[in-house]
Length: 327
Ligand SMILES: Cc1cc2nc3c(=O)[nH]c(=O)nc-3n(C[C@H](O)[C@H](O)[C@H](O)COP(=O)(O)OP(=O)(O)OC[C@H]3O[C@@H](n4cnc5c(N)ncnc54)[C@H](O)[C@@H]3O)c2cc1C
Image (cartoon, rainbow, N blue to C red; front, side, top):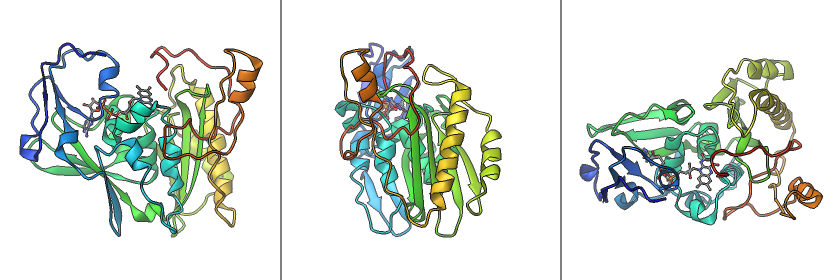
């Protein structure tokens, strides 16, 4: 939509030019900013003109620029020892977006928007990534993504702060990872998304997003017993309530997913990535459509704005989306 209160869009090319007047906001891909009215917004400062390299692969960290698009992120080359690499495509495909969103929405914009179903927040939190934040005084600070997002559309960013990049430890990418996701409707926003990571040193981390208002991480020195894990999930108190899922359903499916991932981590070999969930539309409301919507078949997951990844649990009836059906 047109943002009729915006009078200026500035295009900095250096950090010195990166300044925000009152009423101005950073612009990433603009897919959220231009999707709803922005009262009081008078100007935008386009971060994409700063020329940040989307991806830089180092020995210890992979640096993902905040302006890296979802499409670019999915082109991060796999390495033989990066067992967690499939998480990139699995999480990216959880953001059920058109090719336009896929190609312009940025990783930083996704984290800064801080929706519970922020699929890149799920990925980065699950991989223990650190956000590098540029502060208005010319400095920078670092904070784990899992802590930066504090609630529904809230985070620790203050006025004038800009997400510069995300540092993903290569140790996380070398971990054995698992992924589960479910949505109420085949092309719906994530209702619950749970990842697991078993590090080479034995640490087991379960990260719950989409079902909770902010990322919840459950950390264990080793793969815990079922009762210990269930107890940890039961202590989570931030279950989200919106038309994409009721809190008790989100708690229930997240607990099921966490237990599945715990059992998976005990298997001698890493199982293949969960098959993507492919929706084959039939006539609206028909039995064919409903049956097709529940059919999981193998399909390539990247690159491209493919439908979301496998939903292991049966999907209840779709709920109305007051936000106009954006996934
Ligand atoms: C069809 C559709 C489906 C969508 N599905 C999902 C979904 O499933 N899950 C989801 O989370 N979102 C979804 N969105 C919302 C949005 O598109 C995504 O969150 C997207 O990743 C936002 O990225 P962007 O670069 O376009 O952000 P922008 O729209 O450019 O910015 C979003 C917000 O972040 C701020 N911002 C941007 N970059 C930075 C930065 N580097 N530092 C600080 N602040 C910054 C902006 O000022 C603004 O407040 C969807 C949108 C559409 C239109």
